[in-house]
Amino acid sequence: GVHGVRLDSGTVQRPGPVALLLQDVTEARRVEAVRRDFVANVGHELKTPVGALALLAEAIEGAADDPEAVQRFAGRIAHEADRLGRLVRELIDLSRLQGGEPLPELLPVEVDRVLAEAVDRTRTAARAKKLDIVVGGQPGLRVRGVENQLATAVTNLLANAVAYSEGESRIAVAARSRSGFAEITVTDSGIGIPRADRHRIFERFYRVDQSRASSTGGTGLGLAIVKHVASNHGGSVTVWSEEGLGSTFTLRIPLAEPADHPMSPPAVVP
Ligand code: ADP
Figure 1 (cartoon, protein in one colour):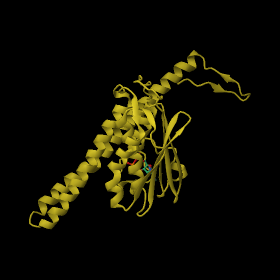
Figure 2 (cartoon, rainbow, N blue to C red):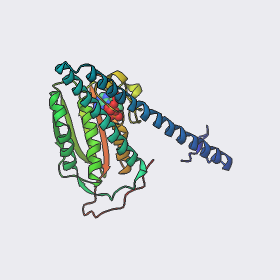
Figure 3 (spheres, protein in one colour):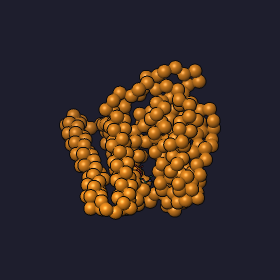
Figure 4 (cartoon, protein in one colour):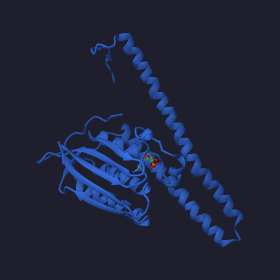
C-alpha cells in the first residue's frame, strides 16, 4: 500500500509520482524475493523427510533377517510419511488461503461446533500427553465465515498448545462476544514464546527453536494458516505469552447478524 511520509512537525506528506513508481518497483522486488524464499524453504522442508525415507529403505534392506529391526524401521517410515503428508496438506491449505482460489460464501457458523470439531481433532494427541482440554466461555455465538477454515484455524492453535505443553496441565478454549466479534481464546500453561520471536511466529516456516520444533514434528506453517484464515474473514489473531508460564492466542472473527443471510466474502488479503 501507499504510506504517507511522516515529517518531524507531525504533518503527513504524500509521496510524488516518482516516489510512487520507485515504491512499486521495490514492492515488486520484495514480492519476488518472498516468492523465491518460499520455494527455497519448501524445497528444504521436503528434503528432510524424503532423505530420511531413502535412508530407512536402505536400512530395511540391510536388516532383512532381523524382524525386530524391520518393525522398528517400518514404524519410522510411517512416521516420516506422516510428517511429509502433513507438510503437503498444509502447503495446499496455505496456497488456497493466500488467494489462489476465490473464497467460498461466508455463512453463519456456530462457534460451538467449530470448537467441538477442533477439540475432537486434537483429543488423542492431548490424551497421549496427559493434557486436559476444557471448553468454556459463552455458548450459542455465531460468526460469519467458512466452517472448515475456522475449524482448521482453531485446530492449529490447539495442536500447538498440546505440542508446546508439558504433561498434566490444562488447555482452555473459550469463546466470548466482544464489540461485534467472537473472541476465541486458546490458553496453555506450556513453555511460552520468547519475546524476541513473538512477532515472527506467524510467518511461514518460522520456528522459535529448530531443535525443539523438530522434536514436536512441527512444519512451521500452522500459525501462517491461522493468520490467513483470520484475515480472509475480516478478523485477526494475536498472542500473549510469557516464557515458562504459557501462551494465549486470541482469534477474532466478526459475529453474524441476528437474522443473517449469506453475504459476499471480503476481498482476500495477500
Ligand atoms: P509449528 O508447526 O512449528 O508448530 P507454527 O506456525 O504452528 O509451526 O508455530 C510457529 C512457532 O511458534 C512454533 O515452532 C513454536 O516455536 C511457536 N509456538 C506456536 N504456538 C506455541 C505455543 N502455544 N506455545 C509455545 N510456542 C508456540
